[in-house]
Length: 351
Image (cartoon, rainbow, N blue to C red; front, side, top):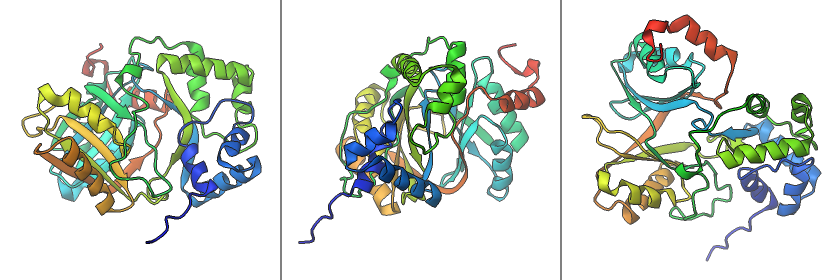
């Protein structure tokens, strides 16, 4: 019988920083103590992973909807011969954060978000026109069962392992009024946190606060659902998770609530949403998983099918090309410049 390798402090650290970075003067010292390292050792490991391209950034993760932004997944059907050109046009939009080619007639999938005063449908329609897409379908979130990407860096977790979702629909506050201080906080904390002993010092100085005051404001935003956490984000491929799979399920409407909650409990699922259907798209629930191989990713989807969705019609869409993947930046001037250039008042529902 082959012995299971012991989990190393490095692996524990990489798992730990995905959960949250506490807003205290010396957060890496606190985290290091929890995983059996010194502060210097923890910082060295994180700097190494940053240099290797595994660690993309450490920053705040905000809830788009609670901040008043309108967002949607968008499915596009485009001429395969022109797909790269279509993607280039869509990628130029500052509100587009993710864009992938997938193995389906809807062969391009992107996410877009616009601020409260903008018209999401007008932006998507303009991208449809500018890109030359054949068909564009909005796939907004009708209900959030789970969001939260955490990769098991130990490689020991079972594909059907369970845990309670950290962030769900009940954590959102869609009536939240964003203050000027919130906007300033967002602009500072969406920046990449430096890998130094006192990483919050510059942000606190820019906000005219102490670190303790910054932490208190962060807690208020967390309580409102506007701030999910401050944490590390890894590049999937560099971290070894080279394959992603979007399992889509034709769960009947009267069963979606129960099924979605159960699917969200799978630790392997990073995103679980209820989305609208169309004549050419019967799928109600979306689940996203990542794996070190196609076999692993598909195995995680199969585990859901075996336990939750026995006999339910489903499909697996996987990425065949990544066109864009960036962290969405809020309240940036580039967005308003794009809107001013491309969207006329007559094209918006808000006019």
